[in-house]
Image (cartoon, rainbow, N blue to C red):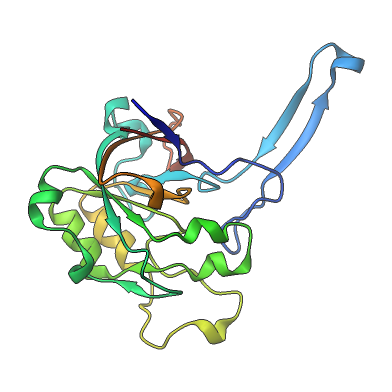
Length: 219
């Protein structure tokens, strides 16, 4: 058995989705002065490698505490999208055969974009079209992505954004309408085999719309 960690380290000043709360550490005690070291960690529920619950963008939808712990253990299939470039759409034509999706409850989209983590280019990740996300939702497949979102993220340079990019969050909308999860900011999914188990367990946050996870692939 091989375990591969797909989690970006949590660090002060780490990349976050544009306009959201930065990650901060505040030391409250030290070993030398207080006998124990402790910190206050400030981070949004959607910081770093994390899972989105359907209630993140759908009123009345289930939140994290509505699910069993086993719901965050996924039989996953890899979708190789490493040929996609900056802000390229991932379409239905890029998706695997229905038989592959039938054996999986999460599709992990490997784009290689995690190599840009910490740079402005990371915002220009490929994205799922609404139709591609709906295809996954119809097959009861959650998704995992190597980017801030399965939808386009605002670019540092707006001139990079394409005229045909969708408005709003059609990929989120399609997946949440079917009560599927979205695991965002995976690290180097392109190194994984075609089939694996993804462990992505959030804290049991009451009413949680999302939560950082330790994302680990087992194969």
